[in-house]
Amino acid sequence: MWWKHLLAITTSVLIIVLGLMFNPFKVEAESLHWGFQKAKQEQQAQAGSAFDGILKKYGAFYKGSPDEKVLYLTFDSGFENGYTATILDTLKKEKVPVTFFLTGHYLRSADDLVKRMIKEGHEIGNHSYGHPNMANLSEARMKEEWEKFDQLLAENTNIERTRFVRPPAGVFSENLLAYGNELGYRHVFWSVAFVDWHADRPQGKAYAYNHLMSQIHPGAIILMHTVSPDNAQALPDFIRDAKAKGYTFSSIESLYNKAMDFPVSFH
Image (tube, rainbow, N blue to C red):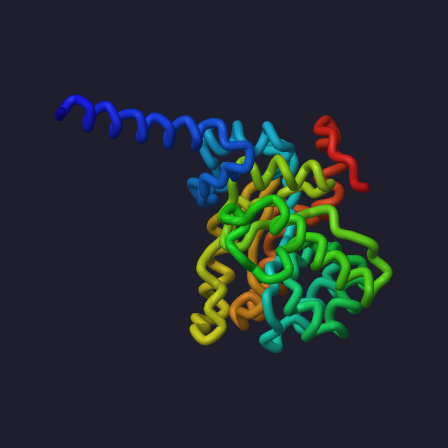
């Protein structure tokens, strides 16, 4: 009878739907891609109410106070391309602290530079061990990515673990933020960025400088990549000209300390 076949199909579909809804092993992995409206005329970048709400819920952040002309420099480093020493020279001369978000490959291949970063007072952030899409991983794999990085860092330096993490390519999920908090990590996004990660496509000092100056704003967390010669060349002028406009530079750690209203235990 046709109605029996229809009933069987309906029942099967219902079982599948209920299974997906109540499966205790289901991983909430809806991928979100970080993005924002860029700053103009020194007005803060805006990620929108949806992203603002998610980040506030999990104590993540992408910018500081709109009332303080403070900048927070961060660099993502997946591999060494020969420009980090120059960047470190500039930071040392200008007395500017930075957070370097590194991968496991960078720890293994550029140990001398990592140790120099730490010696000169810079913060090491966790960009994952293998640079995967973190939002698509199970919680066990998320933990492995973060803790494998930390273990390697602890083996080669005097740092026991990292506190700040950044998801590769800005791909994340609410589950990633929540589980990171459980493990004592706090996610750091950014409010200034431009295409600077193609190691084989340099576009010149002016390219990086103009992007940085056009997006500058109070409380900006600035993302750059160390693989770019453009960034290494533009950094001295950018820092000096930002200071001339009344900006100071501070660390992600100091920004975190101002936002201690969110409980994250670094265990």
